[in-house]
Length: 106
Image (tube, rainbow, N blue to C red):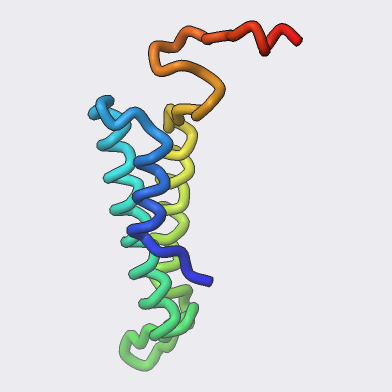
């Protein structure tokens, strides 16, 4: 089942501190790369994974240029994923200090 880009963006935005503009920018760049990746998928599906290049009497079968681009985009997506600072709901307070109650001691 294809992932909805808008739902992915909503999920990522819900997991970061939206007051941190660097994190918001990372989400925007990530979503832009996801959209590009989907377009590359469409191009490969339309044209096939290989293309034939003709140069005069010579014919070459080469991988679709989008395949190499997908590899680069995937590497960029992974790099951004590694740098996300997700806010763990329910495990830490927004100030970063843990809050405990007497019930936690039981």
